Picture (tube, rainbow, N blue to C red):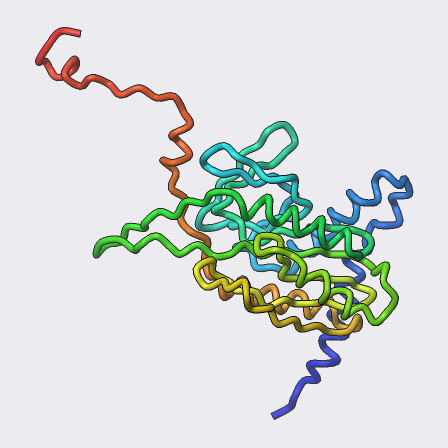
Length: 265
């Protein structure tokens, strides 16, 4: 049986991925548009390579209590089971229950960028999430255990001189639980994948995460494959308890006796 050279396949995929990320970048010469253009390119890149059950946008995350996160450059959220998106002007507002992952997009990787991405992740993870039971023909499934929302930073290059592994490990390990990152990508250097616990109930702060990385030649392929694996581990997002969101609507209960003939309205 003929075999395929996966290494060569990945090299070709990497070239294609880089080309897609760079598409249109040269059309924007104004410094103020560079960041927005980079974010848009990454959003389109994820839309191209992720399965259609996932949606990708720049957004603010909200919860049923009315709290909100910072604005997030790139959000991967559910487009099938718990899809619910609000709009406020030009902003998309996505319920926390629907979110799988959040990423910050920057040109350069450095200590401040890692800290910044960690704080953005914390603003999302601090939100309240509901998890409703799901009815089926024989009864109902219990509410799904909440998964930990994935987080990362996507950059083009690093401010650190190669090799950058020691710097990345140092500043990743300095992050507190809610600020920890699962992915650090510097296209020109490496992609780092941090093996944090996927589910809230399993997290042990005393255990340092395992960190794996690959070189620049296959950094984007490595990012995609590891992201797909972590999304696969999560499975589906929890079912939204829509009544929790409805509690913020001022509603009145009708007096049914008025209408059932027992007394006059």
